Image (cartoon, rainbow, N blue to C red; front, side, top):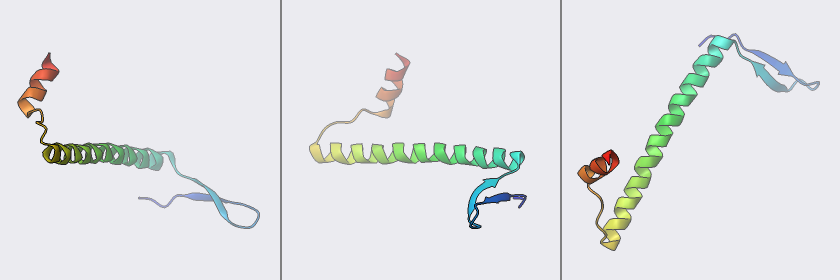
Amino acid sequence: MKKNLQFIHDDKGIKTAVIVPFDQWEKINADYQKILKKLEVIHAVEDGMIELKNSKNSGDDLQTLSEFVNESKS
């Protein structure tokens, strides 16, 4: 990634903001959106694992994948 960043400093010389070239910003934002989607999947898997563990402990039956797929077609 290019280092064409510009920094804005306050009167004490502390960085308070950054100016990023637009093409770099688009890349950063696209990467960020991909990361958010991956996190969403990871959280869904974690939730599924918790549900699986809880149902195993309580003896409840879970819906099969076939049942789930067929249900979503209805």
